[in-house]
Structure formats: C-alpha cells, structure tokens
Length: 407
Image 1 (cartoon, rainbow, N blue to C red):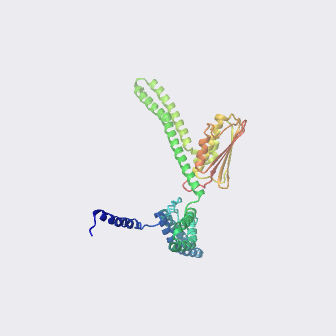
Image 2: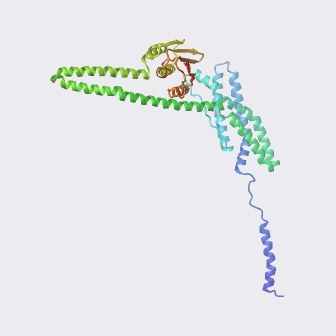
Image 3: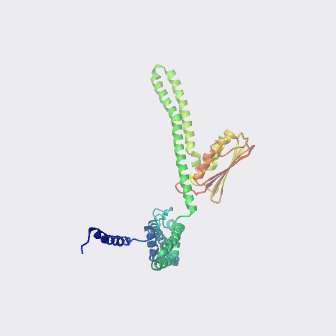
C-alpha cells in the first residue's frame, strides 16, 4: 500500500509534536538557589568557629598569663604586647567583616607608639594598658567563641535539613554579627565626637595662626618698614648735604633720629603683640599688671597661682586678658575693672569684671566670638554675663598644664 504525500504529512506531524514536547520538558540549567551575598554570609558564619577558637585561646593565654605574672617584671609588658596583638586580631576581623558582610568599620584611634617614640617604657606601657580599642577587641574574642559554635552548628544543620529557609536563617545570624562588629570593633560615639571636635578645633587654630601671620606682616609693612625706608632716604639726603649745608644736614639727622625712636616703639609694640618679654621673664602676674597699666580704666589685678603653667597656656591667658581689657577701654564706659586669675583642680580660671553699661554679646562685633573660638580650640571655655546696665563679667577657662623643661 502506497502512501500519498498528504498521508506522510499527517503521520509526520505527531512525531514533530512529540519532539517539541520533549524539548520543552528539559529542566533548566543547574544554578545555586541563593545569590553571592548569601554565600558570603554562609562562609563568614562557618569561619566563625575556627577563628573564634583561635582568638579565644589567644586572649585567654595572653590576658591570664599577663595578669598572673603582673607581680613580676615581665607581666605587664607581656600584657601590653598581648593587647597590641589583640588590636591586630581586631584589624583582621574588621577586614573579614568588610569583605564578607559589607560592614566598613575604621579604627579611628592610633596604635600606641613604640617606647622610644613615646618617651620611654613606662609611658608606653601605661598608654598600652589603658588602650580602650584593644580591650574591646579582647571582649569581642571572648564573646565570639560561644557565638561561633552556635552559628557554625545552625548553619551546617540548615544547609542539610532546612534548605528552603537557609537564606533567612543566615541573614538573621549575619545581622547579629554585624551588630557585634559595629559595637565592639569600632570606636565609641563619644570618641568619634571628640575626634570631630579636635579636627574642627585644629582648623580654627590653623586659621587663627594664618590670620596672626598676615597681621604681623601687614603691621611690619605699613609701620616699621615704611619708617625705616624713610629713615634710609633721609640719611642719604643728609649725607649729600653734609658738606654743602651742615645746618640742613643736622636738621635732617635730627628728624631721622625721631624716626628711629618711632620705629623702635612700633617694633616694641609689635613684639609685645607676638609675645611680651615680661611674660617670658616674670610670668602672668607682672605681664597682666603691665597690660592693665595701659588700659584707660583703672584695673586691679590679682593672680593666685601655685606655679607657672606651660608657656602655651600662659600666652593664651595673657592675650585673653589683653583682648578683654581692650574691649573694656573701647566699649564698656566703665569706671573700674578687675582681673582675677587662679587655678582650680586641672583648670586655669580667668575672670575679668567691669562696672560699665553692659549689654555685651558673644556675636556683638567686639571680637568675643573669635576669642571664644580660640579658647574652644585648646579645650577652653568662655562664659559671658553682661545684662543691660552692667556689670559685665567674663569668665575664661583653660586646661592646666605644668611647665615643662623646654618652657
């Protein structure tokens, strides 16, 4: 029996349909059910156990051995060296958390310098033993061993018995790990705020120093330098007239002598504005008495200090009082004023009072805002009480630092 082309076409169609059905039933390509972030978290949780065992063993041996031998000579140096090693463990943990968990935690406090750069073994030892970052790293290694056992066990069991919910389990455990890293391996909020304040204060100090340098340059250019140039020209003319007209030359020399006196006075005032010699030689009491004698208002000065503070603190105190007395001369319309300086615990206190009209404000255009910023830059404080009608009381606080051998 022969088949027609139509029959052949009819019988071939089902075969083509079966082939198409077989092709559509082919399963998709094999791939992982979770993305790379989930697998990074799984690797992190599985690595918690071996790394936790190593970290726990390290801190137990170092801390227990260091504390146990602290009664001997090698105990505290061993503990300090162990804390430096704990810092390195914390650095490695931060790198692991950054690579696998996406947590970026930076170490804001520097590692204590070597004994040679730190001024000796005892200062370095004391700084290392008080290092808060190292002790938080030690606490992290203590806590992480039981946590590492838990995360390793739960992750392994979930890999084989709870595959559908593995992603949720891993994410929850990883979030706890992220919280531990942020809380124990990062500086505290107060430390971060303090660092930000110091960075801001450093900018204020740099700006103030630059402004002072510009002021000194301007004063030299407009004052003493101009007088010295005029002096040189006058002496040159006097030299030319010395033989022709001795009387005129004598007059010109006399004028040059007056210019020399004025130039010396301006240089003396400029040097006093930079750092007065009386402050270096005799201290705050004599220096403040000297600046008070130039005030247009009678000023009483009382300085009660057991010793001279560091040169930098002494200079800041002097210029603070000097600027406040200038404000009294210009704006207060006072009849009397007083300056008191004393030490209270670790602070140097300055109080300047006048019986003027009052009404002074920090931002009132009298330079008080700049003075407050300069004091704040050195961890100081400025408090102003000036009701309308007076009196005005300004209290300044500075940190006390003992005078060193270089002062």
